[in-house]
Length: 331
Ligand code: ADP
Ligand code: MG
Image (cartoon, rainbow, N blue to C red; front, side, top):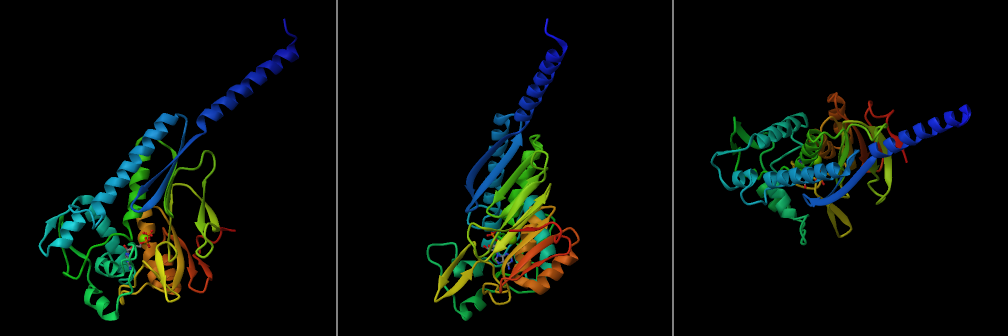
């Protein structure tokens, strides 16, 4: 027989060992990356069963690939490509209708700064190709869509472009939407802790084990360095920056977020990060605020009670919305 103190110690030791091993099982984390929508997408999933996590992540990537096919103007038979090819009406999936409606809300709130009609402008600049160009003012004017109308006219699921100058391009909102759909898929698979990062469009499900997720905001002028971090649960943080997709010519930087009035790259900001309940909303708002510039952009963020943001102005000054000030940790 063991003496009492010794057996007590043994029981405590076994208990601790059990706790430790359970903790270890609950803390499995799987991270995978895939190239989707021209971006390296990273998904992290936390749970107890690695196979299940891996399966869920693969499904989430598939969901994102489907979103890419559905929303890309380049995919020949996508709803967007079909609309762009005809002046007639055509039927669209409800997912496209819903996202277009969200984009239209942001267009109205931003006085037209957010526009899903700039496909023609984007094509002229060809920024995401091997051969980017600086178009002339005349070339741009010839493709600029009307400023004060929605991109699409909708009657239920029947849609048509409001003008043949509208070339639908949902690039300012679709990646955020894809992040939302991926998170939804992970949640439907029973996960309670995951993060999806599509090149700075970030959404998190739950917290990171016992704590919130800690999310880094990229410094717009120091590659690979963070400007700030913040903690979040069940939220999205999306950044639009002039450093993501751009080319330089004659000492000038030309990037991919256009002012719908001129078709030129918007010049008021280096980057805009928006925190919101959904990544689609955060994505659209980040693009809109970027075009509006620091002052009008911050006004837009302060009007939207569920959104907060950090704007880095063209001169490098950082401006933070009232609800985010306490949450940011500067680097
Ligand atoms: P990223 O796609 O790199 O995350 P954004 O969300 O800021 O960056 O989106 C930029 C994309 O949005 C452009 O590549 C283009 O497809 C589209 N876009 C450009 N200008 C505008 C605008 N004023 N409003 C809405 N979308 C825009
Ligand atoms: Mg955007």
